Length: 285
Image (cartoon, rainbow, N blue to C red; front, side, top):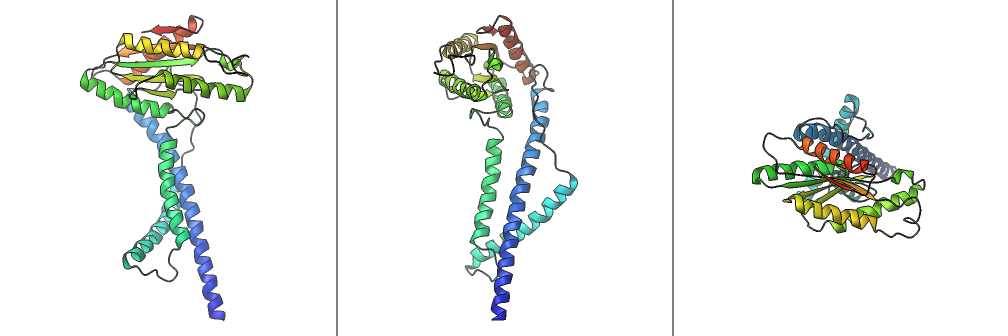
């Protein structure tokens, strides 16, 4: 009886240890990936865009970096995790689960960890409020389209646009609802599947239109301006949350010696000029 009780206690301790390991692994993977994603984005964007952000910069919360102690702890726990995974593999190969080996709960946790890695990769590029791509995702897409346009010698359209006076809306929920509605309206206004829209900053958005000349870009810009101006959201657009949009448009066929950061700055300059006109305007550079 004592031997059975001892074996049960050992099994319970083993299961508890596996669960603890899994929780540590998932937490550390999340922290490490978020830190790595933040660092890589900053380095790669500065490298590929052709410099640091200038006029188009926004203040963003810094993701805390993991120190050497946290990294060592991660490696230690990950080694235990790998040992357990090797046990799983051996059991699957032989078809004979061993005594004290990982149970179904651990295997479920292993799959959850893999899912977490994929989710972090996806969500790191998504704006949680609007569901659009975030600024990092947009800049990654810009680099891709810039290189393609350079290779194909095709024109690339870029919009930077923002809502006029929305900061005066003191009702946070209405403000968020309005931003989400604008995002949906702009998505519907940009017809082609190759076009790409993102939330650029708090009240600002950006759109990328591959293989688009000046006239085509201005047609889409006017469609966006008009659609936002005519939005009708009862309880929102009938108070101070009602807004128009100012759009800066830039269109260019990039050369190898040019950098995407200059393209962004040109579009942002056009956007600032549209704001100076009093809003609800489009300026092309």
